[in-house]
Length: 183
Image (cartoon, rainbow, N blue to C red):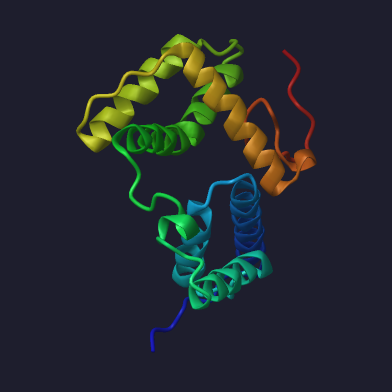
């Protein structure tokens, strides 16, 4: 049996908050009609060695009962389209790219503000896209408006996960107890 590394209490607490946030998001999406979230939750729980949340357990029991009574014609009735169509794959890929660049955009905006300048979203977009292209070896174009939207979504998500009072909207970093420098 594989040994799991022991995390510090703070890291374990943050991990638990992240897991709770991920499972809540999946449940909301599932209840809004995205059937794939049930399959995604099964995989998420398996990978993270978690028990299934009650809503997923209940959905699987309903599925089993439907199968037993002949009310299930195809797995897509349970899990939706497990293999998404081309347009959906492209949209999912864009969402993953945006998610992975979020922290980079927040950091670049923080650097601009620390230099006493308002963020230049076009310049930030160009720099983050170039860094991403260099790391991944594939070209990427990113508009300034998109970078600004990703920034606000990322900061909002961080505030939701870590608590609104603990994240500084200007930098995306945890707030410190010291006062800000006057400019």
